[in-house]
Image (cartoon, rainbow, N blue to C red):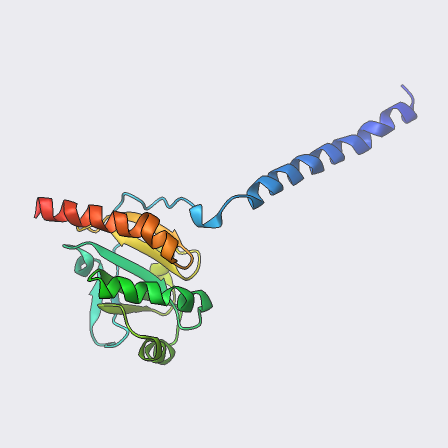
Length: 186
């Protein structure tokens, strides 16, 4: 076989590989990044004990979240999307839902000032300055919100700001179901 007959294959193989990569890339772009499944769903929340944001001499840990349905919101004062979701968190607190905050990779004074300015929906926030606890929860970025049942098991993870549609479609029905389950076993 002559060198001329082999020449098209030399160019065709890389083109086919490039074409396949472009198809895979296109499929990936159509997926919603908020639908990343968490391997922690259905498992107990990672154990932690951190200083409280507002009282550095006191700690709060996983055991404090058990016994009632809770929402754990990962937030930071530098996070623009956290400001977008904040009215929904305030509304959840007004409705009587229990919210805890995980202040992620922030400065304590900036976080306290942010809560003073925008309102504090949290029973308490813990201060995760180096982000280790966030990493254990599989946090990709802020904000992220976890719903834990009364046994401390993660039942739902929302990546990105919680908006009204997510509240009505997923969070509020799940909270009602979990609270009913907790009352039935309590």
